[in-house]
Image (cartoon, rainbow, N blue to C red; front, side, top):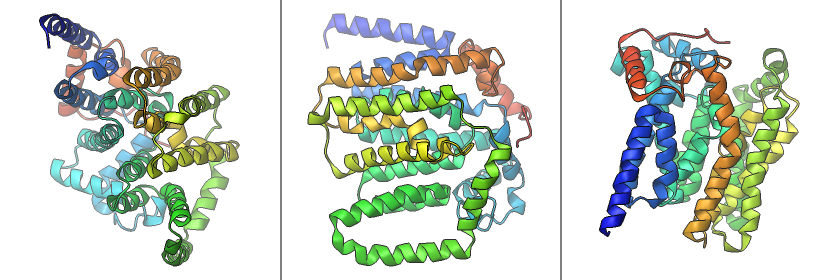
Length: 396
């Protein structure tokens, strides 16, 4: 490295530090956008800062709606049989309950510690997935998800399903014997993972026809178990009951969710001759198509389309994996990710603007996600550590 480039990097570092002090959120955005130009060591150090901020950014939320409901369960975790809590997937979705039990025991029931622990799992998984997809652009890819409208909308509500999707993505990027472990973890996090697992089995049968002798008996056994524990009646009951409790998606939300995945598939088509054509890339794209189909099939059922098609709504940016791991040069990879971030830019900034105006329940950083400086952020974290966690609402 010559002297001039060292001076440039030092000036950029000072600029980032100033921006981070003025607004940690915008500082993290700048770090991620510039990250592909950093050295591997600098990028790894930056990733620690970005993930640490992301965890605390969400952990500053004052509980409301589903998040408040999770904390009610956490507060009573010692009175719950974690392997037979029928409210969570008829007892199948016990992963988050195990986390609650461990955190409650270690911290003596500290609620802020639970929020930090859950978001530590979520963002640790997300950064790992991004790094496995591309070691050079992983921070920019991370930001592509973190700064997406769908992720902001769902990461405060459907925690079990977010964790489940992340385990599915780990299953895809690993694509080896470890995938079985991640597949199991995804199901015990949220039973909607059965859609991705089913797709995995179908694609496996197509490539290895001998597996059909193993998969069909397993499929029959799983259906018998689900029937006996009442899972099918539980799912059907949830579907017919949601319309009195939840509202349908707004037209603007439908447009935003679809613009993300359509942009991703448009970019995949544009670079179709240079894509990574490995089995996991093909599976990821197929999973994206299936999500798009499911979104429109259940569009008229309130609170269902954006949950059943959560990958499409919150993680469309990760569909760029075949491009990032394909025969594409640095310049085009950077352009692709910037395009994807640009699609989400206005919707996310609008959400944060409404938070600042107190027109939105997403109360990041005490309703000041953009205007808070580093000292406001530190003061807020200090309050969370020393004072009782304030609730916005008591849940649904």
